[in-house]
View 1: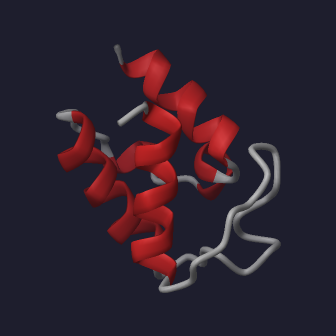
View 2: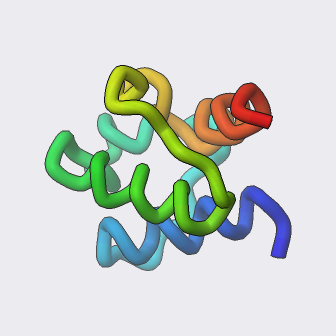
Length: 77
């Protein structure tokens, strides 16, 4: 499974919604994510991609869209 598909699967699980947001769509503005779901999503990203995301990076702006999540993951490699 490619990175984008994995991210989308995680978003669907965390939000309990079967939506397909555009890569640049704000996940917070669209209601897919909120501040309570962010730590759950980050934890799932850590498990799926074998990384550790420091608490200092738990900023909604870093995870605001699928594109931003992909960019963040690229920066962690």
